[in-house]
Length: 293
Image (cartoon, rainbow, N blue to C red; front, side):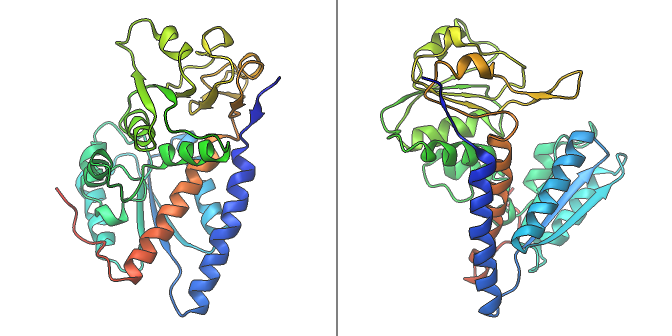
């Protein structure tokens, strides 16, 4: 029986309506609109499209969105100065720096200068450390998106075997920690791993985040597995595809995400959710200033 589709577009659309309703309630209560600042350094085509979609999402739910597109030669110190000014700005609840950055700018150095309470991407060392300690505050956006999709299956995740393919700081590592948090037995495979197909074949849940088109076929997926495809690659003809060979794996899995339309819109939703949560914390007197370094 073909797999059921985890439609990220539909789930995110419904969730944005809920967020918009909460923003209206804030305004009726005399509270301000949540504010998100996004930095785009350079003119990477993929990043430009993604930032445009984030701005559109913010407009849809009623957030104030400030997108700052900076020249590719912008010095790291200048970007840090703008971030630190926003750390102290009470109208700004979330700060997001779009990746990739030019080679002369260190992404970790930039992230460390974002106030942890305004790190709506969820990758500041403070927020990642809280996840390691099983006391998460702001969740990394893509792993949060995947966990939301997994919850929509209605399957009890506790005790399931999960394999995460990829060990990046933004996705693979926090993804494994999120799955541990709900009681999964987690294996992470990476470029140094041996017998990768065997690790995938024993998994009830497969999360692939490599960006290698068509890496995973039905031959190494367990019947009835839940397959979440985080990877996205643009083909020569302009079409997009994921790490998973969708058509053949969909004939074997129980649940599967499409590319596009699966994890991507849910990641953008997670940014909105994190920004709203940051605004709510600020309303309650939580501090968003001062980067933990």
